[in-house]
Length: 202
Image 1 (cartoon, rainbow, N blue to C red):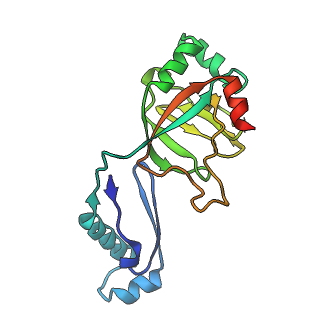
Image 2 (image 1 turned 90 degrees about the vertical axis):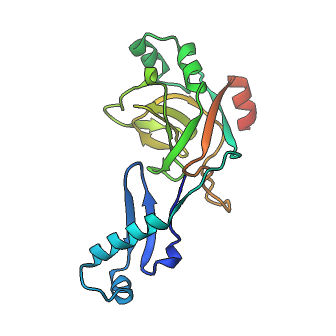
Image 3 (image 1 turned 60 degrees about the horizontal axis):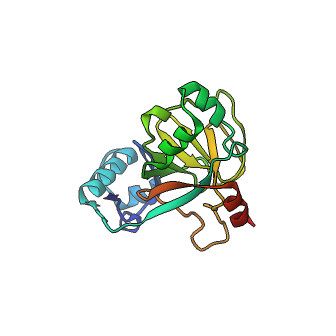
């Protein structure tokens, strides 16, 4: 995994946001200009800083990293879109669940909601489009769209196809580390019964 640069080393860089295929840098143009007296635009200087940071960055490989195992109840009350996916794909709900739990997913990025992890890659058989209109989605809902899967950490409007729900909370604002996942983590889902879900939720 690419280890990005230490912001404290580059005065004027306020924050960085990494997405699938883009990087956003928040910076103070006044500080950047003060620390770099060379000619050229502030944007050009930022590009130079980013290129330098990339050249100095390292790739970390941690083979001992743990896999988060997430319990999911795929009961039809929670997996509200399972019947439609079943019809669309000509697969039984049991087969859809089997495919969903069969893979280990990598967390590619966080976004949309605090703690919402975009994970992939989903089995291509389960590739589903986003809903045309968002619907109300309960916290803990597990969804799929395209080649991704994710967990809604909060009650929210959403357009993903919902196949189940977990009782695990992935955003706890009062915790020292409020967001449980980070980019690069690995996640595997496993099926639990409605009874197991209700016991754990209490």
